[in-house]
Image 1 (cartoon, helix red, strand yellow):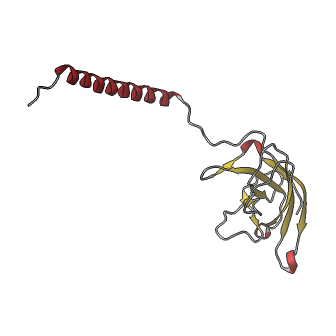
Image 2 (image 1 turned 30 degrees about the horizontal axis):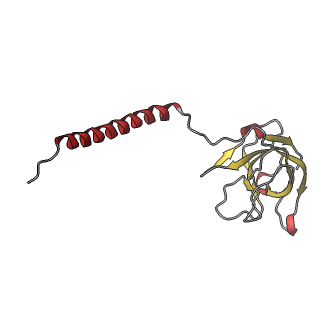
Length: 172
């Protein structure tokens, strides 16, 4: 049997210890840095805004008994908006809380949630663009006030734009 060179073995142990210490120090530094770096939260930019340019009350939509509100909306913000949440009230001085539904909304869609999705490639309402939306208010009788709150799509949720809320008194 050949005799091992003790100097070569001790050098290997030294390299293994050096690498283990470097990995331990890098893990400690990583945990400290991770604690100080803020987590990115999904938020809606302040410059997000949708307005109601015009509205029309239709008492008998398509010859039926439905009462329909046609909203002409425009994106006056600086960012594309995927839709808005609409609520109405029967009194002009009261905060709108009743969700109003879109005509021919897909099954499973939340009441009051309006999506600007027409094209599978491009979704949303770009800055400066306008779109008419038909909303059914039959079950509420009269409408005196409407509030729309724009939203953008987050990773898994809708991100409401609180700064872009638009309220308007109407007569339907």
